[in-house]
Amino acid sequence: MEQILKFHKLFSYELQCVCYNWTVHSRVGQTFCKQAPFMKISVEYFQKKEQASKLLRELLKSDPKFNQIVEDISQQEEVNHEPLEQLLNRPVKRISEYNLLLQKMNESMFDWQPDSKHVHLASKMMDEIASFFNFCIHRKGNLEKVFDIEQQIISYNPIPLMFSLSEEATQIELVKKQGQNLNNYDIMKIRLQWQKYFHRIRLVRPSRCFVSDIE
Image 1 (cartoon, rainbow, N blue to C red):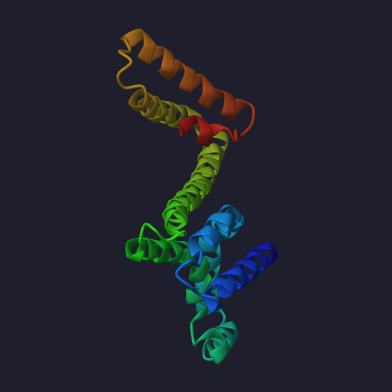
Image 2: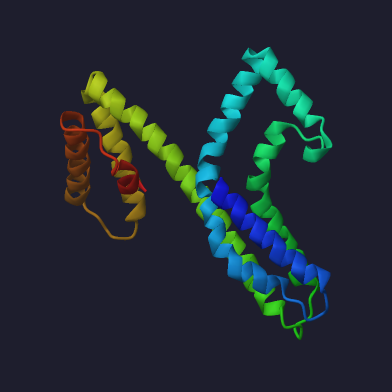
């Protein structure tokens, strides 16, 4: 969180400098292009945000004192009278808001303006960052699901589950290999490889490679 705060303070300062000295030659897009790669430091926040929101909702329901404190804080002008849940969502929404801002700027700029190409490039970069965050969140969700599955494989009757998972993994791999003219032997070989894989993680140890293999 400290790194995220420092970054946005610096980014805010640079944008303010551009705005306070605004001309048709000002370069907002160039500033975004320079700082956009560093926005990826927020990925850990994005990954933990859902868990934090869930915990917040539970505490608001179960702890009246905590609920009252949060309510009192949300009424203060320093937080623009926004509830805590909305503040937690702010960093997540900010990326899409940045992209929307850049798209609007791109539509309203002339080609002869020096910052035109930077705004266009910055918009693409923000799209890529949003996709990166979505991928990381999706991957974290997969890891959590895989951990639950691995516990089932280790703790419960593994045979039916092992065959079910190996069949699902086989179908995913076949979709990826469409157009390669696989015969029945090739398909059987893929299925057997996955059966061996799930048998191995049951007997040896939980595997953190599962998500990468499936994806």
